[in-house]
Length: 375
Image (tube, rainbow, N blue to C red; front, side, top):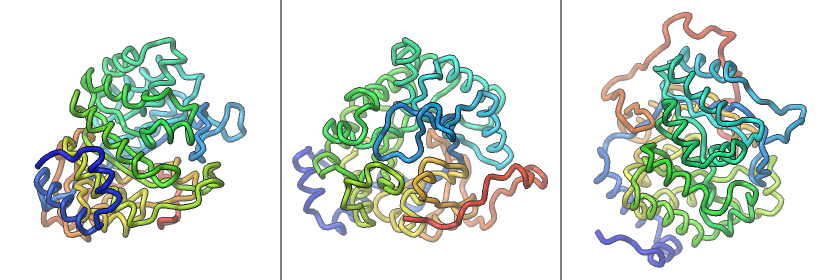
């Protein structure tokens, strides 16, 4: 099948019926991945600091230095999150935080070294591109030097957060202080050159136009052509509550927009193996339906999460809930790691892993949040 050009992509995104996009996306999904399988990861998403200098208008999580609820965790405190993950039977920790000028390269390297040494059974999926960029700036290092130091400490994958929309018009509107133009894609390009594998994300539903969305996908596709390294594409919608951007954004993205973006991205990103549908970002029922729009992955259990929670968007599940949702969509679940290696399959299995009695004590459990998905 011939590659879709940028102009063809804009026309297709704007005018193709959703049902047509869905059919084409499912065909591609099934050609690239087992048609009956949907993957997931057992993970948590803790934070090591909420102090941030970027002042992104879409974020409700960050705090300025000196704020009464600002925090910066020591390496030992970060390790407590990995200890919790181990007790909870998780396999991956996605660690991220604000752009904190007080934290230099030695902090990040020590976090990785301790994690790899003390918790070899927990996969360290750490630090987004903006964190790496800020670390390089405050440490007087190049991006390559920071990434190489993390690689040498044992890190192998990087989460794709912080991309938002890879359009300078959008970046300069919603997050002008976060990184430099083209920094996100340059960091991932350098990471791939070193050997890292990374994900690519997109936060839509704010000030972007269809041309900006296609620009984002074209940027990813071109980078993947040059040095392959992206494992998956992961879109989610902007959560407006408690953010400054809510005052200017009038039209919110709904369910059909999510389905359209998923299906279109599966068609356009012809050099990506995986596309992820988010039960966590869009809600459980929407997530289940989204698996029929070209997605082959369902993300993680996200046992601990605070960035979306800061906007009032709370959605919870566990290992069993993840299996139930995937089966409700008509697929067989398969557990993976961040490299998309399959760790376990569940064909015909009704029960799941239960931590040994006493492994997670009551006082060790995370706060119980409302078990719903708020919009």
